[in-house]
Length: 484
Image (cartoon, rainbow, N blue to C red; front, side):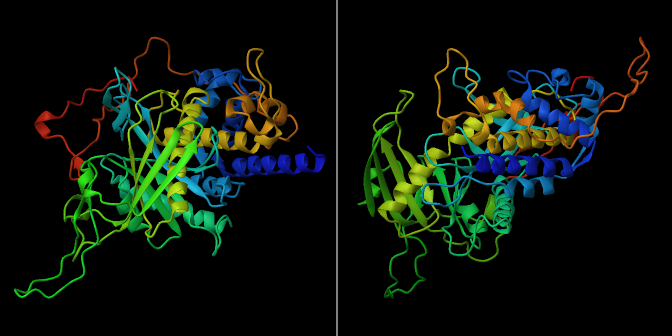
């Protein structure tokens, strides 16, 4: 690599580190060194206090906990700083964003507020369980091709009883506006493609974001029923108003499908033959209930393209079931259909990012009580992940003897992290040197804690989307516990 290119990329990394230091409004030196400790420590982050032993962390463990619990972080400025960094794009040059929820499970934290039941899978014998915790909604930019890299742009903790579709739409709106302000999207560029899994109401999100240059692609359950466009109105002899919906399109009834508008067949090295069928201008039937209960007048007709994808086999060897997708645009071509299902397969790259955050960077490792401290630690790990992404073209492959060599452009985040300590030595640190001090006396030995924490119930959500409140005679007493 030419020296000028290396210097330019080092300048980008150093510029983000300065911006990150500037957004720290309280205990900034401690929080900045804590982030460096996350990046430079050997192996995975197993406990929070062990980060105080890293050479990059020059302060004591008391300052570490004080920074997490009482530090300051301007999340809005950090979001803009991350958006201003170079972002990956798809093969056709468009931005592809993935949105998904990952939980920070806290089943035993009875003294932690704002917990709600989070959906988990595979904790037993492939069982679906609802475990208390803090769910976070992430938005990340995806690359093209198989990779474990994504660019995290935003993270938001969902409160109990939240309307997930409305909060996600507002989150995506802010992300798209920041992308426009940063110059990542300009008039004339392809629309931004947003990919979501089956847990999101894709038609409703498309309706809420109809004024933005975005396309929504969401996965649908295999038991959904959509409707075709209404037939042309003819004046019947008996009168009556025109029909609003056409015939049914039941995913589980092939007899109701008819001939697809688009049919494509593609050979894939991982999935074999991929066959995509697309039906144009299908829409769900909305009712004045749940999310649409407050809608005045006639409910909208949200048309889109339904795509059915089938493959020969899965890389894991499991059963290859059909995948149903809904695209918010109509009149799809074969190129549009192939781009949609290929982009949906790229959505699973965000799962590698979640695994890195949790198993390597220690996102869910600390047992924090305060949700504000959890948000602070979440953004510290996101800032660390962003620095790894910016250091990707600069890192050397410090592989283990039993690992296969990789090309520089194919290094995984874990391998880039191994050499980050060497890169850090080439960049000046804005953090100030620690001042010598003496630890406080603390609570006298043998004395009891007189400030017991309050026990909080886990928030729930009813089928109507309203927050669940436990009746008075079923509420727990005011007995406090020291766990959390």
